[in-house]
Image (cartoon, rainbow, N blue to C red; front, side):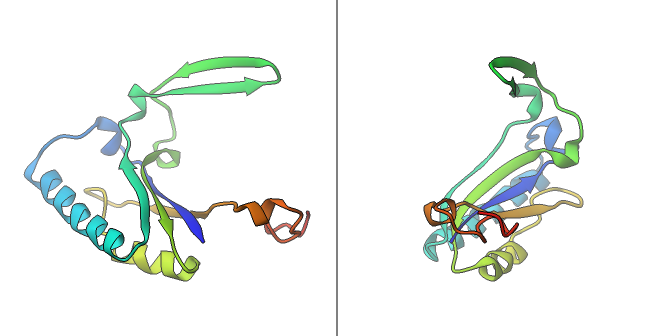
Length: 133
């Protein structure tokens, strides 16, 4: 199964990358972790994202589109980076995340979300967990 692994933003990550010795050490640790993921055939893609101050959102309302400039509020709901992994199941994904270096200088969270596969969208009533097709 494929999963999207989301590194949640923090106030620090929303300030942008500052090349301190601690930040460099974290990047090196993350690089080693990424090498393990690649050697295991788990990692399909992964990147860090710049702060939302450099991003935009496009809001949809029927045919209308509104462009909203960052930064965006609710830092803990934002994403600072991601991986796309191929894993056997959610337990394997959780095991890999538990091995991950803390991606932030303080407390942080990583979220794992399964990706819809074509079979999920072809009338499987358990595809979204609601029991509805």
